[in-house]
Length: 507
Image (cartoon, rainbow, N blue to C red; front, side, top):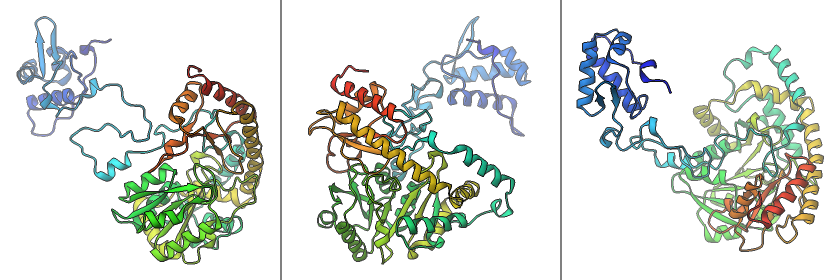
């Protein structure tokens, strides 16, 4: 390790009128308190520091003497001056110095708030926002069994996408260089309105379409526009943690509504959690259990919203990939009174880094939604929107979705077959009809968190169903993603999972 005397010590600029001794004292004191000079660090010699700072040696000696008298430095004859190893706690209000901070917690959620100095207090909303259920460092490594919620990136036509992007870049128009409409690039909004009209039965125009960076942003904006702190909001239980955390951060009193084979139990919600003003549902394929919301309950939910003057956010996160049953019309297609905000995302359909999603907003909320989005984010960058529009308008999007629907159907069948061979009696994978991942169920009483740990030790990515619980215990199980890996990897992964579940020491 190099000696401190051989290391350049950065000193802040001296402000006009500040005496040299005062400037040097404050610079060294700030370096000690900030951790640049860690406890026990050796300072440069007084001669060396005087030469570097262009001050007299007497000035440096005076500063060192003052810092030593105040407890910042300690001197040893013939050895030099050192930062005190144990500074008085009052100097830092009990906060550790940066130079001696312990190894940080992994940058993973859920519920791991970032370390913050005691002198900076997070607000109540800030503490809730710091409880993210998502990996803060992303998922850049290649997919492995059984990563959920990710499409097959190797199957995406990136060369085609790159050619479109290059062509658009060569022909960039002036209207793509200035500020855009808050709700997004109008040609893309027109294409989305036409798409959901055909594929989801939703009657809308481009004026109803808002382009955002994620469905999370749509939920957050809808909550802040329609809920006051303390208002009640319904979510599915078990259900998507991202929606629940966003609603909590908006000040809502979140109530978990049970889910059964017919989806979200509206009658239970009306009886046991009355007074709600907001509901979040995954009507097409419930996350994480899988059932679609029945027609009877769709109509009951819309009836409740009309009577309560409430908002329903419909998150249709992967319904494009229905490979065993006929396509389902959206809950929004039945909404004649304008209470449903329908959300979809291209990040799961194409590739996660795209970060383009959309919301179909009712008439009464279009202007407030546009104004709030303009205030908080202005608009999504126009260039990727224009590339996505060309990808859709030229027919590539439709072809890609059809091709992926067949591919994911084959992989779902491979997962079902492999589970029957290797997991019988250990883990039940039900019939799969849609999506990118599957719920798999243990016998009642199984600790699915421990089982997920065993899978992780075997090099597998799973998530326990208990992670999705809100107010009541979820059925024990795992979420297994099958879309991002090929059939050989599925077969090998299921065999490895079986070994891990049977043998606690496996892996």
